[in-house]
Image (cartoon, rainbow, N blue to C red; front, side, top):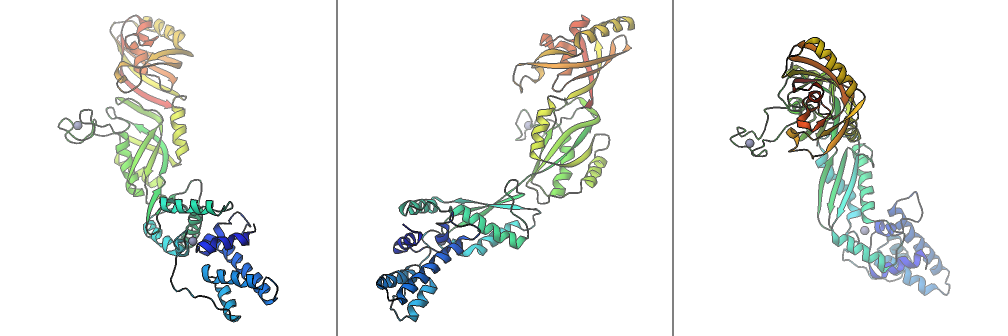
Length: 451
Ligand SMILES: [Zn+2]
Ligand SMILES: [Zn+2]
């Protein structure tokens, strides 16, 4: 069966628009549009049958029948004109019938583009993508039609709609479509007589490093343990376990500047609430959700955040980042080296000489060795109970007073430093307490460096 015979078969049963006709043969012939495919098919058929008609050939009657189908059923104007010029009678159907497959949606692409334009107002974006969710009525009709006529070279309703509306929007907005990582995805929920537009706005990611100069605040917001964030008497109806956090000190300025709906703070690991983050700081990525503005003056913002949080937190090295870098951040946190300073106190009085001997033993035991850490008691309510193997690289020590020592510990990310010191009742092995032979407690801990 030729394409032309198939077209006649279709129009004998249904009226479909030129977009949909071309779409049914979309895999045939490239570098053209479905509309041009459809129109070319009908025009070629009109011309061929006009030729046969004029030749007074034996197929003369058959040509008239075909021209009539093209005029009456396909409502193709050139075929209508031929019939009129040759004085052949045909029935003029006045009833405006809509395309069986698309209900004339494809003839109304600019209207659909306009609906999206309204919601794109006031948004900053470089590129976009159109996506469609079709209702089942459209999908079923389409599937049955293609099966009935055995149409194997067609393009889907969705693809056609996405591309055509995308082209229209691209032209109006003067912005390109982007398929892999669009700033905005315009999603149409489409039925034959209904449509709705929703936007998916890609988050903006800003990376940097932060310092925490005070003790007593967590890295990120914690829900109140009693009410789980709902607000209760214990938390003064704030829903928070701690008054503030590094996240809460940093993110509001970003949210304001990007006119975002919210944010998520991703840290490369985290220090305990009572631990300072010194040196060059800890890498983080701030994810800004549903931002209306994507280009923000990072330098200005850094200054503003730092001024507001003087002596509390500080951010540096701000730059734009991506979702991939968030994943790397989490992954690398476990594998980077970290340097800690621990101020400790011991239960027993020891001399400086004794301390030097014990320090030497610590070095022999720990340096470039692996330790076994079972999840500490203090965090076991929120982390799986298992044994982690962590590497310790270097230990330095300083005798301050008979019961007070300072240690510098260089260890693999994720090592529980307080527990290497106190031994956590044998859950961390070996430990400073074990080597010294009497209990040693970490009193103050600072992170000095994250590689
Ligand atoms: Zn159509
Ligand atoms: Zn509460």
